[in-house]
Structures are given as structure tokens and as C-alpha cells.
Length: 189
Image (cartoon, rainbow, N blue to C red; front, top):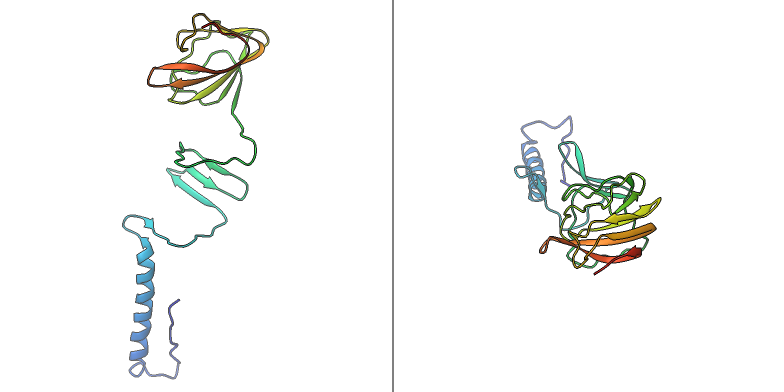
């Protein structure tokens, strides 16, 4: 904080000129310190220590791209972790209930799709996913067949029996899903 010397009401302006100049120098020095951290031209801030705040928001066009509050972190961006990720509590997967169809290519927004055997058209065709994306399909209310054409090594439709599940991972290099796990399914290779 800049050290400012107070000019008294009884001081004359001419005799206070040195004090006024010293106050301006102190303010200018303090502003230079702030300018070293805050680049207003590029709208960046550079800190070497800790920033403390009750919340943090990264916004663009009135959309919260990344938000940290005292109860949650919400990211509306893809995240890339180059180091280990430790989860001390459970991992929650998103679920789309009673799907009659699956999303179009590269449009899977959920990790689990509960397929309604009464409304889904079998065999269900799988559209391409994003590289490395994993989806789980669950048959609800009866069995559901999954078309084998986009699944590596599978030679006939996969039958997911009622309450069965099939977990698949998409690999872009070969443009195919791979079976990761199946329960109460008929998978023929």
C-alpha cells in the first residue's frame, strides 16, 4: 500500500509541493506494481501467489464456461488431465431413460442409455462416438438387439436381455466400438 503524507489545511500549497510530488511518486510506484500483475491491453492477470475468492467464474457470451462455488465445480468445457485423477468418492454417470433411439454420430451426451424394449426398433444401430468415449446400454422391459456392424469382432446382433447391460468404447482409428463389458447379454464373436 502506498504511503501517503497528509497535507494539513493550514499548510500552504507552495510549501507542500514536495509532499504532493512525493505522494504522486508513491501512487505511481503502487500503480506500476499493479500494472505488472494486470495487463489491461490483453486482459490478463499474472499472480505468483495465491488468489482467494468465495467463487470463481470463467464466462464468455454470458455463459459460465467454468464455475467454482463452495458446493460444486461446473465445467461446460471438455477437460484434459495430463496427470493422475484421484476420486475420493463415487463417480456419477449421466443416464438417459427410456431411449427409443440412440443419438446421431458424435452426439452422445450421456454415458448410460436405458433402452425401452417396447418402443426401440431392434436391432439398434450405433452411430459413431467421440474417440475413447464409453457408453453403457441397458435393456428395460424386455430384450433389445444391437446391430453388430459398428462393433469390433462381433458376428451377429448382440441381444441384451431384460435388465442386461452392454458397455462399449469407441476407437476412432478403426471407427468401431469395442465390447468392454456385458451382463445378461448374448455376444457372438
